[in-house]
Length: 90
Image (cartoon, rainbow, N blue to C red; front, side, top):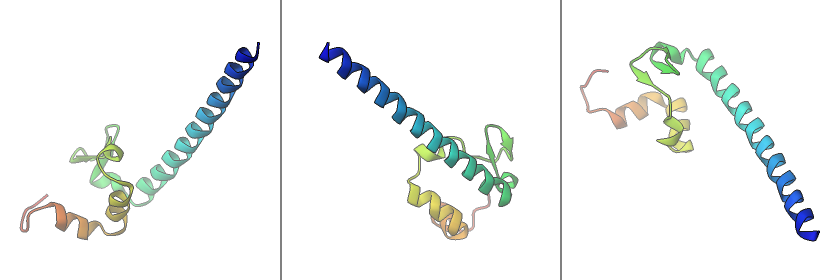
């Protein structure tokens, strides 16, 4: 009986945590999309096929650290200079 109660409690906690994490992720995605729209990122980038096809941002969160993404948003010219050879064009 005690085993069933423990398993049931763990299941409820797991579901609550998963729901909370999903809500946080949704809020972060919505915030990111607002920044994407407000800063007109679609002129150079795409997300899920929407926007310029030149530089897709899909999956960038798995390729860059949070700090690198922050630097791209705050200092894009500096980050571009670090990633592209001098004199190269887009």
